[in-house]
Image (cartoon, rainbow, N blue to C red; front, side, top):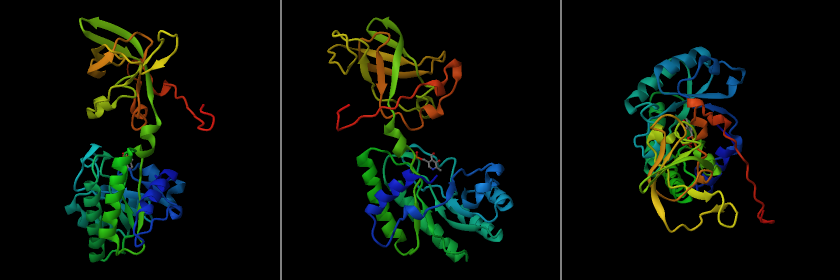
Length: 334
Ligand SMILES: Cc1ncc(COP(=O)(O)O)c(C=O)c1O
């Protein structure tokens, strides 16, 4: 994945880099296939000339040798440390002890391994995994030279970046430091990033409508029209807890749609998704004001790995949820 998105991140990184390490996004005219297990057809498409497959197994290497022997490869490394909302290391990336056998196999097959890729997990919570992965990548660069392979020149630091400014700038600071510490000797290094959630996360707000209600003593129970088999699948897939939503009352006493109206009295509340499955429970023990059918619960930052991971389960079609583009013009205040 190389897009303007990648370029923006690369520019942000570039803005803080030492002059020994230069990142020039405009030069990057290639298509990365970061899926470690590619379909044979994907490796055989007409656009494959620009394809840069990644690999972490002998099986994949053999497939690439048969289907796309002239490709330039990246070796995907399992990061030594992970601290992310969605770790990926249990599924992807070569172990340290697998690096030499994989590089030797590539060499014997005359395959061109041009660099290293890693992904520290999506939604990185702290910068250290990037530093240790960059250090490990440098060791692979050195190992390749020791084995007599051509000098590697691409370092792909994957994704994982959250849009939250403070965490992002911590990550950038650490990544730049690690690039300086470990790669300043590599004169023609190209650094690639593959940000996904960085761009998607905060771009979407999910507005759910209350479609049912039950009162049991103090407890308020609400049903909403989206849930764990739709845009909120993160609850089932990764045990994520969603933050308390913003409440929007359908009608307030003035007859307007209101947001965050001050409510003195709140009740312990449960919020269920619409399906027949009891695990489709969005919030428990959340303090909410008294709500009625047609009121709204609004969840910000729902753009990354949300609706795209939903299903049609129980007849609720996630892809049928309408998306509204909201545009505001700061000059007219509209
Ligand atoms: C290989 C690869 N690159 C990039 C991404 C994007 O990651 P993120 O959304 O955490 O930035 C993913 C997400 O799973 C991925 O698997």
